Length: 373
Image 1 (spheres, helix red, strand yellow):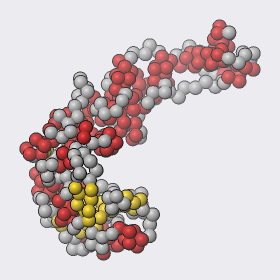
Image 2 (cartoon, one colour):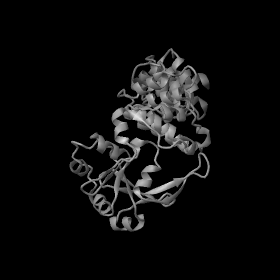
Image 3 (cartoon, helix red, strand yellow):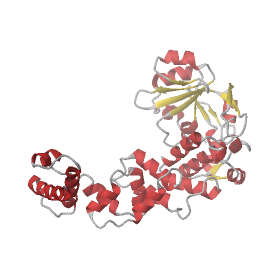
Image 4 (cartoon, one colour):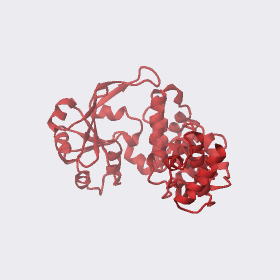
């Protein structure tokens, strides 16, 4: 599968710098998504996964950079110097003491490390050092070319059910479809066997994908995680809405909105209430939306609440030029009349019932405050 692919050039363009030099000399292998992209001649991810059959401590000392270490699994994250990172792991085997538990790990050669992975398309390794040997013992490159997702072990989803979420992510992102055996095993996966934290972490990764809606639709199709009743089209609508320039710069709300739409995070009922609302005035719209989680607003917009756009573009940032001090100076005593006067003046400004400027705002606020008093 690497015929016609210049691995020297492709790995050079990864800009691994000193990390590549030190780990290449130590027999390191590029694995994961970047290895998959290298053998397919595709554009790799920004961050790089590297496996090495050595103790990490001495290698990290040689690198001389600050690393985030996870000693339980023999892994570390090191910066590549340009905002990207390398995830370094000692090659290992894994044994699961019970379904859904975290694995016990032990050092092992790269061949064994590839054998403990989830799918054939993730069991590919490319040597950092020239001539960049390629290890593909399970035919992952051929499966990738055929658009096939194939699980390596029959017990894979039993050992770690979150792999079913990863399966949806890879299928949606790479245009793969599970083969017959993998599909049957996916349909038996039980996410309830893993902790909520592990499940939610994988769901967030899926929700962050451009093709997240397709991934959640696959989880529903496989019976792994059904979508909310009657809401099968909502994730796709959220996926489309979050591409709008109004939302595209808000990455975190966009991720949470996809989780809400898929029923994987609370907020759907509130979003649907807002979507069904038909505020009669700008001030009413502001009262409905003020203080609401932006992710919930995004879902509401995707579900048909078109007024949310005007709230964000026109009404959210409308403010008074006066303050409570102006009302105090005009003789209104401290108390609820101050707040009522300011709130009422803002409503009138939003609804176009008063002229712009301090004098019109103050006259409206004093009138309302006097009625409260």
